[in-house]
Length: 609
Image (cartoon, rainbow, N blue to C red; front, side, top):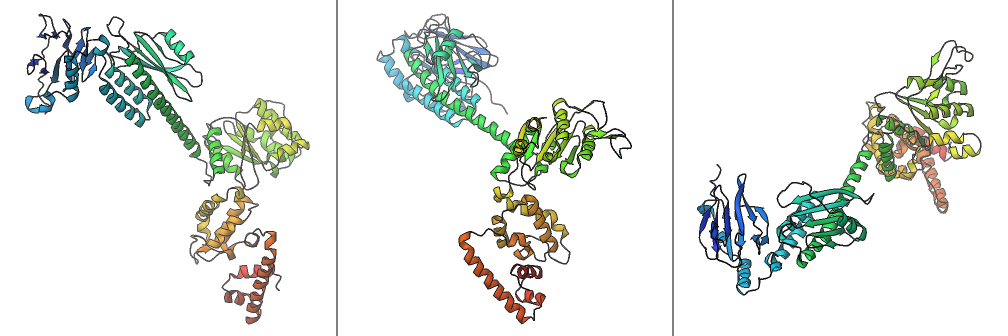
């Protein structure tokens, strides 16, 4: 249920103290003149000081260019929409605006505050006769407002909210007509945006700005001010953020005082720091979103190491483009996975990606595979055959092991990449190619160029976006994730007679962490697959690893003697077990609680027959 509205003002000080004045549909004028609706016999009150009318269904207070100003809640306002509880000072009189029933109005609302009593004391002592002091708020009031403003903008990270707080403070403590904040573009040093606020409107409707003043403030880096216009740079030690521009009404009696200028300087300093911080936070958030989008691209790769995060970011940035990509790295590092991720995150993802291993074909067959051939182009070419470059129209072709292509074929590939056209083997017709090329190699192409085995012009055409895949030994922190993924992938191949694999033993984790992995991720995958298929325990142990992994951990030279002695101890233990079991290796392995395969491998390693 909505409450009943009884809009009125009640005098709580001055000659009419205690008198209520209802607000009707017509303007109510307050002043010293006999024609005023509320007449105040007070030399500080102008003949027609202020009026209260209605804008829509809200009361609107308008100062009628009075000599000493109309104050609301301690601050000068040329105009203001009134809210319940607003305290209007006209000369020595204070009126409280109320729109609630008397029962809802607290007694404290109808009493003067200590600040109002202090103001009255100064007025009665004759300390407010000067015009400047008449419409400058009390210093304590300004300080309280400024501290509240500082607290709010320091807690905000939103530039729009900070600008709103700047407008709110300035309109609260100064009789300005309009305020604008001009923000600079850090790249061009020009004005990026301008936000306006006018005393008669809460919208961002523009008002005229003196471009000579703003231009001088931008170029000189210092404040520009006159009676009616003040322009302060918004600057921090590291950046010029923009400008704060304020104007008084051209036809009004108000001007900017020294107190106003000092306060605007303080506001500009605080606002500049807050706006620069907000801009930096916005940049960080945008950069974080961009990086997360790049990291969260659909790539199908495993790893959280810094090196892999950089790969994901590159895939995220390069995927949407149509540029040629050259992926380098050792065998088994996952170059094809990168190629698939690039295709999957490209505009061509709806079409197919064709994979060709250039090292798997002879020169003629590779040319036929890629470009196609005409009937009779070579022995055995008994009919026309289209190549992958025709089938891949609109899609992607991944040329793996590009470093193995012959010099002749490299020239044809160069023409395809440069001009997007090609000919079938044995043909004369030029065909257009609408496709993206992604190439990969484990060959050092720069060395191959120096040796004359790879064309320099083709290399530069391929190497538009280079992506280098790290060795597994360079991202050891990813090994546990890869192991878990491969156990999940191959867990189904374990025979039903044995328990499913749940992980690896601590010893195996240590072996994996210290092993060099010359075959990279592919070697690790093969090791896990074999251990699952051939092992019998819940956790993969050392005995289920190939000797190339379990017995080839790096051995520093200074530990050579210790390793020799350790092997001698192993040999002695195994020989005793064999003696006890009459040289039965299966029984000896069971006696030592070792896997028979691992026991046989140890015997071979230690040269035991």
